[in-house]
Image (cartoon, rainbow, N blue to C red):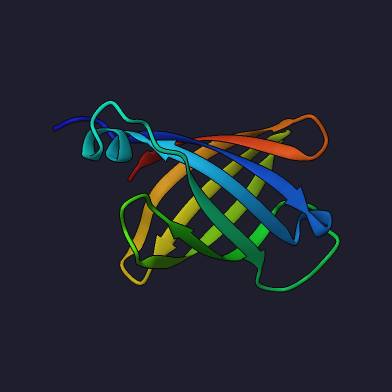
Amino acid sequence: MTAFNGIQVYEILENGNLLNGIYTNTKLQLKNGIDYHIDIEIARKQHTDNEGVKGDYNCRYIESNNALVTDCKLKILKHNGVYEFTWSDENGAFWKGLGLMAGTTHIAVSYDGV
């Protein structure tokens, strides 16, 4: 089985209460051949605060060639400047990743399937 991994870059909006992301991953690349796709994700913090990026989010993403919008949860923790991302649904976690700030308004995340 081919390993699953991906990369995502979020624009940080509203002091971290809203994340606007673009991403690609090996699932999308394999499904679509060599025509790499960039897709979108939006995450809104469940409880608005001024804590920056860390927190619990409601998340929605859309994949290329798929009319369905997928809803999930995103939990972001921060440890010594490194962000830990966990995407989950009612069946538990399905992706985990590590992120680093890219400038002051973006965060880049490398993630894998659980």
